[in-house]
Length: 308
Image (cartoon, rainbow, N blue to C red; front, top):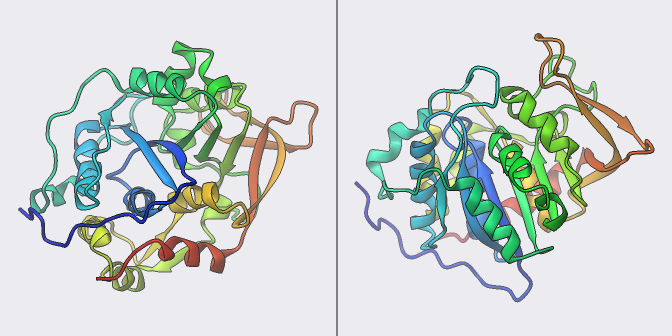
């Protein structure tokens, strides 16, 4: 097991920080780990806590703790809901957990407290917390149902979720939205003041060959575990779905957002979780990313990592 294989990774602090709570299904698609590494390195990010969701939530929490330890940051981590609200679980395993034996990580986490942790933290910082969701929305739906005041207390809700254009005809539904469609519907109905979605049709534009990604990741100690995790991600390319959502919190010019209204398909069993977008409606409470500056994104993403 690697104990401290690299020099301490010290984040460059800034006086202007954004308080963030991260809800993630780290351990399946590699981009969750890529996103968490960015947040830990981003000097403007004050990461208040991490909750995990979907099958093997404990192992997902362990994977998150690997990166926090490399970053030398003590971030509260809570395993959350492992089962969707109503439909069967479509993501029972966390394949990247096979890499855990190589890295120091925590093994004991509080159980049954993820939603309450989110609730208490948001109440402690009213109007200051941005909730970033990069997994199925079960935890967030439970949070909003448990405490209807939460949507009003958030500074913003930023989600990697949905498909909103026909830019990629084969992309009819997005994974996070369809894994727990009823939770997705609850979250999109919530009266959040600023509700931003970065959909699959935009994130598919920020991909990089896996070999190039691994070469660039090798320059930073914080990204070293991600390289190991990626060995269990069987694809020749890595799409930066979740990191794109995260970077928009710190740079409003990476994506262009349009206001409108999103509805979730629940009736048709073959389309459950589909996201239907209507721009500029009377009930425009959602902001959806429609364009991305790919070069700007990659520059912003890699700029936070220090070479050693």
